[in-house]
Structures are given as C-alpha cells and as structure tokens.
Image 1 (cartoon, rainbow, N blue to C red):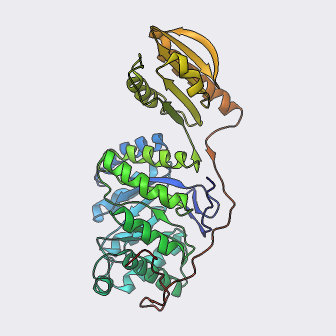
Image 2 (image 1 turned 60 degrees about the horizontal axis):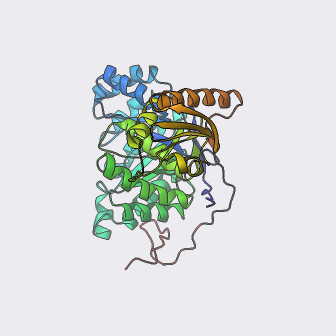
Image 3 (image 1 turned 120 degrees about the vertical axis):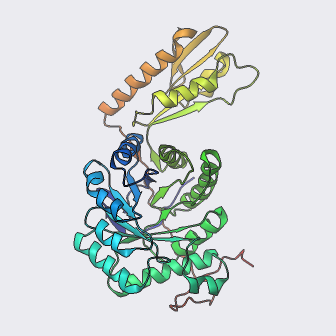
Length: 394
C-alpha cells in the first residue's frame, strides 16, 4: 500500500519538525502531578528511553507553572504545556516550554487568546489549538445540538481563521473525540480544508487493550489516508505504553521503522516451546534497541525457517532442540536451554553492525499527491467558510 501524505505547513516544536516532509512524531503526556518535579522528571526519563519525541504536561495552577523550568532543564525532548481555563498560566508557561496547548472552548474571551499569542510570538514557539468533543463552545453546541464531527471542525476552523486574522500561523491543530467514527470524520473534514499540521488522537480511548485497539483503528485509518503529522495514543495506562503502541501503529503502516519488530506464531497444538513467554521476554529485553530489526520466534522447527524467512534473525524450536536462522538460512543448532540467550546476544550484535553501517532508525517518505476535497455542500460556518458534509451522513 502506498501512502500519500497530506501536504501541510511545517512548524518546529523544540528540536522536532512537525508537518511538511517531517516523519510522523510520537507524543505522550505525563500522568504525574506536575507540581511533583521529581516524579515528573522520572516519568519523562522513562518516556525518553521508550523513544517519546514530544512530551506534554498538565499545568492546572500556578504551582505547576512554577515547576516547569526545573522540569524543562532535566529533559532532552521538547516540552508542551497543557492549559485549560486560565490564560495566565499559558503566559507563564510560554516563557519556558516549546509549545503551548490551549482549547478555544474553555480559554475564555478573545483578548485572553491575543495575550497568549503575543507571549508565544515573543519566544517564537508554536501554539496547539486543541479542540475536544467534551468542551466545545456553547454557540457551536447549540448550532449542531451535539459534539458532531461538523461541530468539532467548525470550532477548529473558527479558531484557526481568528488566529490568521491577527497574523498568527505558527500552529498545529487537534480535533479529538472518544468515538472513533466521530474523530475520523472530524479530522477528515478539517484536513480537506486546511493545510495546518494535525496532531491526531482518540481521546479517552480506554484501558491498555481497549485504548490500543480503538487508537490503532482510528489513527491507522487516518494515517493510511495521509492524515496526521504527530500523534498520541491516549491510554488509561502507563504513558510508556502509549509510546510503544504509537510506534507499532507507525511501523505497521511502514511510516516509521524503529526498534525490534517481533514476529511470533499465534501458537497451536504443534508448538513445543513457550512462544508467548519468549516473544514477550524479547520485547522487554530488547526494548532499548532503536535499530529497525525483524526478529522471529516460531515454535516449529520444520516450518520455522520458511515462516520466518522475511525476518532479519530468528529462532525456532521443538522436540528438545532449537535453531538460529538469519534471513531464512540456518546458522546453527542451539540447545533449547541456550536458545533465548543466544538470540538476544545475536540481535544485539546485529543491531551494532547495522548502526555501524549507518542504518539507524529509518523513516519512510512518500511523495504522492494529496488532493483537497471539493466541497459537496453549500453549508457554511459562522465565518462563512464552506464545511463539506460527508456523503454517508444523514
């Protein structure tokens, strides 16, 4: 499948490029109390180790805002401040962080937004316009009756046009809903009417498993259509898991290539080794490797090499013996009790060799065309901008 990325403007968040020809970046958000600097910094270090490229923290009050300088000083990746309700917190945060997120539905009067714009402009940092289905402006909700995709889109477009009217364009946009269909439709509508980079996500997606599934479907669909410049997988779980799922989504679509991709058979009555345990152990022990490698763990010696021939390296075992193979070719037989340790050592060595060759974390680029939508409807927003209505909407 060839993915043609949507052509967008490019902004810079700290050291990370977002939009344009930049790779889709993976974000997460700390679950710690921002006022607890030690706990927040520790979680940030865990996220950085997992490969997180942009990290956001909540700034609910002045004490949290005052903690930002210490937190920022301990980081190696860009920091975003998440602001709701009180624009004064955004003004404080703008002096420290690499990007400020505000929600047009709850930040207040326009003059407050203008003060935030002035603050971020002075430091040359971008703004994230974060529209959320749970906090739309009252007049938008009254117009549509519920937080529909069209309502989310109108809220986002209204904010973007208002910012453009005062000459501000250094921004990215998000339109999040917890319903997968609504989120997809909202992003789709906005993407066909604006060229600002999009931060995509399914908000309040759920627990580790449920949230991963919903995010994979929603974000996977958007990304397959070329929509999305940076993403967060929102899980009611350790934020490190968000990063892992995010990269797996990108890897499965071949938009990013980073770290170990474990290929494991689904197990059956023929399997004579603990494939499940071994595959999970591999992911855990090799999580530090950034070099893209396909590693296969298969439970059948007879079919192992054939089924794992696309892997860079792998093992297969059964009947008290195991084999190590590379690119579908047998390397040597290994005693079962040594099989896992042997594979881990071989993978680490192979990663070092590839790094020496300059084959570190790779990025897939696509140069196809992405055409904007020709509006199907005469419906207009309060600003007179055309908002197309999806053909499958009643």
